[in-house]
Amino acid sequence: MMGIAKGSPKLPPLSMVVDVLRATTEDLALELAHPKPAPPEWSEFEWRTARAVASMHGISGLLAGQLHWRGPEGWVEFLCRQREHITRRQVRIQALVGAIGERFSHDGIPVQPLKGAALYREGIYCEGQRPMADLDLLTLPAHAVGAGKILETLGLHESHRTFKHRIFEAHDATPARSFGEHADNYLKVELHERICEPLPHRLIDISQRVWPAKAMPGLNPYPSRAALLAHLLLHAAGAMVYRTVRLIQLHDIALLARRLSPGDWQLLLDWRPWWAWPPLVLSERYFGAIAPVAAMDAMRGSCPTILRRTCARQLLSDVSLSRLWVEAFPGIEWARTVGEAATFMARRIVPSAAVRSDRKFALSSDPSLALGDWGGLSQSRRILRALRARTPRPWPLHNVREALAEPH
Image 1 (cartoon, rainbow, N blue to C red):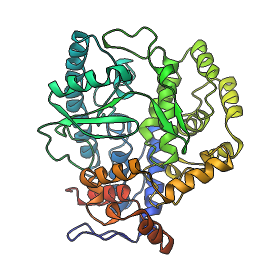
Image 2 (image 1 turned 135 degrees about the vertical axis):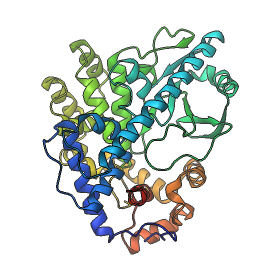
Image 3 (image 1 turned 120 degrees about the horizontal axis):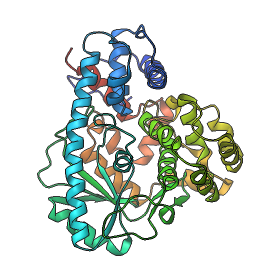
Image 4 (image 1 turned 90 degrees about the vertical axis):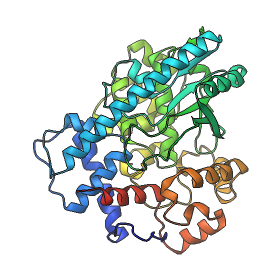
């Protein structure tokens, strides 16, 4: 088991943490979709874990406005504080979006705000409901250098790059609060040149579907709601692979899917997204029917058999940040051939240079890796440790500890 830092809140046995994480995740997911008249009968540890779950899944702001009960002392206050921080941070994000729009328009470069920013623009969320940890932007590869220079003039600098995006952070960045939402956490921009996800190793690229056909200098919307939903579904599919889905993602999908017209659904079906059915059916498991039956049947039919059978029984707590244990080959059910599965397993055993670089960056920036030695272990030592005993993932364990340490 990972080492626990001196002074950290004492945890119950990890078997109990697993059970409580799973139960509170499923309970809060059902509460978000169908609020009950009375609070659940939870212990103090369960209520504390519920704070961790609400934070990890990005639903504190929604719960603050939707629950029909108050719970124990401190619970509602926690949710309301989180909603206030989300609101204040949204003001900062909107100011940044406005400045980006002006500069990109002035320099003749088209740019597209993605995901959360687009959902707010669609009017799907009100202030304080949906958190935005960072601002995602898409531009063409030909404009990548110019886009980076614009972000630098706005007080941001490139801190890291992955195969999907470049990360820009504020020059005067202060250490981020590591639990829940905080209005003063530094602003971060992820600049994409393409929209893609490895499923689980094969790269699925939908950039041409997402980018508007007649992009203009400055801010551009998605070309259609079908394109926005396709992006949300692909992003959720990638998160399902690595067990990092957040409930807010399923909520996004449910709200947007109900706004699609028949023409939007047909456009989405024409793209034959074999990866769309798993996140859609997971969203429907909690929020009810969100897509026409014919569309769901068509997407189910294009989903590979093994993946379809596996996802048909998965719950949010199986594929989300609430899953505590490390897996050797998470998401292998997404492999479409035996060869693809073998390649995925080989890359897990011997990570690429890009993966090693990402891990090194995470070690310097992810607060959940500060309490133990997991982040600094080589892949071979990680495998040996996981083979000897069940090993907890750092992020959910960190959030549970932080929730326990919250003032009463």
